Amino acid sequence: MTASQSPITSPLNDSDKDITGKALQGTLVDLIDLHLVAKQAHWNVVGRFFRDVHLQLDELVTAARGFADDVAERAAALGVSADGRASTVSKNSGLPTLEQGWHTDREIVAAIVEALGTLIGRLRARIDETDKTDLVSQDLLISIAQELEKSHWMWQAQLTES
Ligand SMILES: [Fe+2]
Image: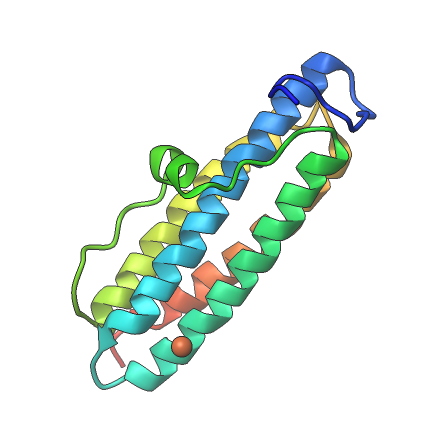
C-alpha cells in the first residue's frame, strides 16, 4: 500500500483532513518526546528530593504516553496514518533536548517546566488551527492542554525556594 492510499474513510473533506492531520501529527511527536524526556530525567535525577521527582516523572511518562495514544488514534479515525517512529520524533519534536548525564532535582524540575511550557505553546497554536477544521479533534487537544497546564503549574510550584 502506498503512503497516499488510505483504507480508512474520513469524516472530513481533504483540506480539513490535511490541516487537522498535521496538527495531530505534530502533537503526537511532541508527546512521544515528552515521554522520552521524562524517562531520561527519571533515570538521571539526583539530589535531596530525588524520590519525589523520580516518582512524579513516571506520572508524567504515563500521562504523555496515554495522550500520545489518544492523538494517534484520533488521526487514524480521520484516515490519517500516525507516524511515531523514532526518526520522525527526532526530526520534528519541538521540545528542548535534555543534556546527557546526571542532573540535580532542581535542574530537572526546571527542564520539565521548560519542556511543558514549550509543548503547551505549540499545542495552543494547534488548538487555533483546528478551530475551523475539526471541533472533535480540537476538543481532544483542549483536554490534553488542560491536563498539561495543570502539570506545568505543579512542576513550577516546586521551583520556589521555601
Ligand atoms: Fe522507573
